[in-house]
Amino acid sequence: MLDLLKATSILYGECTQTPPSANIYISDVLATAEQMEAITAKATELQGIYDSQEYARNRKAKYDLLNQDELRFDDLENTTTTWQDAINAIKLEYPK
Image (cartoon, rainbow, N blue to C red; front, side):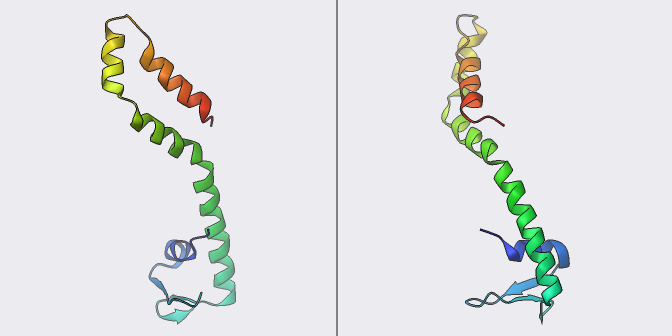
């Protein structure tokens, strides 16, 4: 979903939106059609950047579930490569 208010804030600074309408106000003045075009384009760009980082968010969630300290400690004793294997499995599951 496009975040028009965030895009407006980046482009023009102070802004508000009064629900339930979709009207956006820049410094208490209703945004013009040209401004709305620029806002929509910026929101689309921001959404594309967010979407392109989905793999990173998914990886982080999986990394957080690992008990990485324990896995690394086991690997320090040179008995396993469990930690590296677990990390590589996550990277394979969520490629860039």
